[in-house]
Image 1 (cartoon, rainbow, N blue to C red):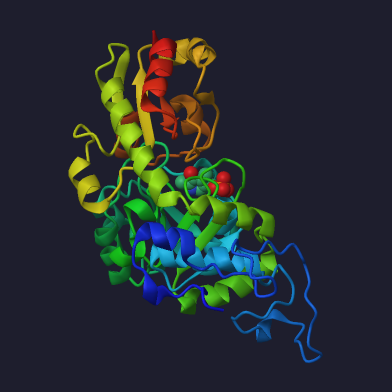
Image 2: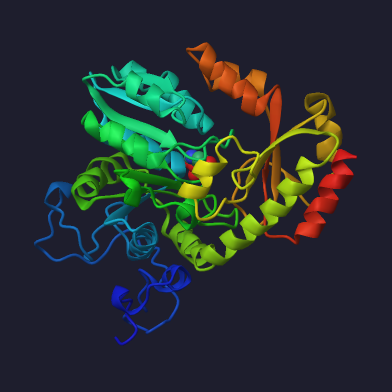
Amino acid sequence: MSTVYNKGFFTGEQTKAIHAGEFPDPATGASSPNLVMSTTYIADTDTIFSVEGLEEGNTWIYTRWGNPTIHQLEEKLAVLEEAETAVAFASGMGAITALLFHRLKAGDHAIVTDVAYAALSEITNEMIPELGIEITKVDTSDTEAVRKALKPNTRLVYIETPCNPLLRITDIAAVADIAHGAGAALAVDSTFATPAATKPLLLGADFVIHSLTKYLGGHGDALGGVILGRKSDLVPLRKKTAIRLGGTLSPFNAWLILRGIATFPIRMRVHQENALKIAAYLEQHPKIKRVIYPGLPSHPQYELARRQMNNFSGIITFQVEQGKERLQEIAGKLKVIHYAVSLGHHRSLLFYLHSEDLLQTSFKFSSPAQLDSWNRFAGEGIFRLSVGLEDAGDLIADLARALE
Ligand SMILES: *Cc1c(COP(=O)(O)O)cnc(C)c1O
């Protein structure tokens, strides 16, 4: 077939987002990626029945082992992230738990960012330690704190940059050096940054994770997750976790996410453009106490953000005078922005995070410095705004009405 994807013929990010990984349907020549909903495939009589003998390739046996639609998504993501390969999961948390199960066993130690996506924070507070795996929570934006937390049995350093919800930034290259010096691997949850901003594997990370539910899918209609990295890590990871634990992505969701990714670089430019305008608007608003956005010179790590991010993405957090007391009133006045969790969609989403709640349920700080850092970024609570793709003027007018 003449138009089978071939890496050699293009280098631009937008062309990659559209064409990488995709191939026309061999039976019909259909130009759109083929949505294959079959769970099973007509097999050769010498097909093996254990995943142990499975070769990586384009032979399909059972969809939990591999599927042509999911495969096209994995190939596209690997090209966008400049990774050797990718394994897709049913959700971002499916990808994260698979990585922890793959990389850690009883007796190992891992360093995990002290502020992170809540479900990751919660499983590393209890469920993972109950398996005999020791976890140290560290503010990884402080690289010296990471170095100090290393132990002879540290196998994994796990960071998020920018981290949810504080938007603190971690220096990936510096932390990769520290981890590798101690024989540990570095995993980066790059959901907030996206490959439009940062390619952690090129900065020395060993694993990259995305919740595809967010910017990559981009439309708020499909859960998905992915781990990217080296073949030598991910071929065994697929057998051990995706295939045996079973958190496999639905081919239908893979197809929706593939379709979403086609416009991903264009969308990220608009997310950033809108977010810069809104962050500047909020920063001068009399009822706003503090705005945090990596693209604002007032961000405490603006220099690192500029060095490490080619796009500042679309998440802004801000503290409002009497924010907790005024929450119901503010949410009730929104006419465009949805008051809802999640982020990275074409629709703008706003959600309030109470510090008191989060510090009891998700984030368990062990040092006064960690609590101090939280308080500096979040105060008694923050609004997290995921700036969508609507016209910036409409979003600013909606915020002006709600904050009035
Ligand atoms: C949403 C999110 C996750 C979890 O992804 P799901 O697809 O909801 O399971 C993990 N990390 C970050 C940073 C997220 O924003």
